[in-house]
Length: 322
Image (tube, rainbow, N blue to C red; front, side, top):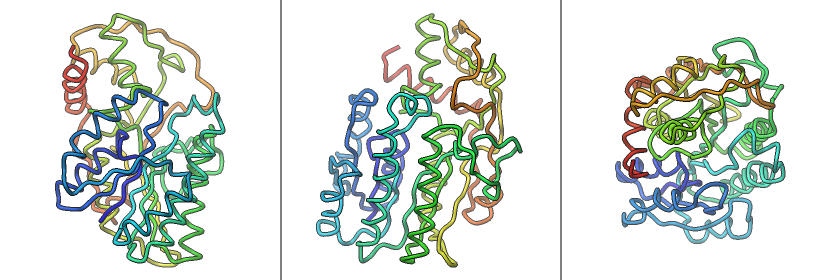
């Protein structure tokens, strides 16, 4: 039995679906908050709740009393995939408290849950490429220092990694942190660039492109991320302390304007591009070194942007009735 937090989220819902497809029982947790459209979250949950092997609990991960009750309700949980978080770099400038509550307190509560589960074999949690902050050496390696976060979101994710290391050291909980790189694809979040761009281009509205277009991202398709998460789950960290961190990216940094061009081609519409300066908390480029995740997890992303964007736009058209 696997517990997935953020089960109504972009990545969490797809991870839960993959677990069910291979025969796992899944307990999904999500608080269904209104940071973005709750209807989208419920639509992601739809196919999951129709599966008899899936159980859903509407819980806030920072609510320690109710989260810890899961130890009595589901003592057979053998793995936790902790994906719930307050996402987004720019929103952290507006509501910093939400990030500490969900990403720090929530992460601590989930670690306490892991400590209390008698059958637990592995705690896998989401980190982010944002932890690399002001680093300029590319590609980003898990061996690089990550002590210069550019945003509160990045700082909370780095704190999660430190908490994971500490709990592995103190209590021997096998734990693996996964640094995701710019995930995109069907069922994506509406506050992320792919959805923002698709909506604006389709509506004939301008899109804001920061750093005057000199932005590079390691765009990683959702199916490749899900594969990496399951591979990590199946390979509990070992050694002392039993804590590992891996990059999950496409190992290819591509210019944001090329990503936009691929969306234009898939929509058969031209974008109205509005070039703007770099935004606070942002970084110019991300690029994942995945040598460690290839070696230890067998992670091998297969979806090129030229294949992933048409799949994303096909879903976007279907979901929004375009």
